[in-house]
Image: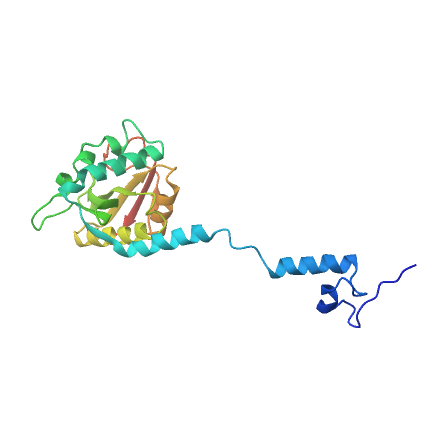
Length: 225
């Protein structure tokens, strides 16, 4: 019977393994060498493109500007609102896409004087509109309650932290305008938005407030300002 030979340590050395003429070069040692080589030389990262793309999006965030809505924003903003709602299967009566103000956002929120109670902001990179959100008095609600209105973001902007930044700005401005409570309504399918609302301190209520006309929405939340 043939006996395999081993080094004093119990394993063949790397020099032994590299030489097929060595007495230590057995089939098992060859397999061990191949395994060690594979572990020592992992394949190139397959996600390089993904990470590069993500880094590019994050670096571009510094170029995004927050500003009050302007008349020239109306077409792009209406398109964003309608496309986002359609993305989640929201079409027909009972949704914001059918609100008259969707087609004339600037005129809806263009208040003047010290009694301004409705505001809306847009997020733009150069001339490209990427998102928006605002508030107005809740229709059919108390004078101290406003409604979060038309908070929508382009898919390319989601997940970069701009939802939280815009929401914080909206909440701060609403409190400065004298509101004591902000109300919102949405649909269960908008899970990412609902998660944002929860993180910003909104809590669930059982029934709708006011008379927004959005009878297809069935998630209701409020936050004390």
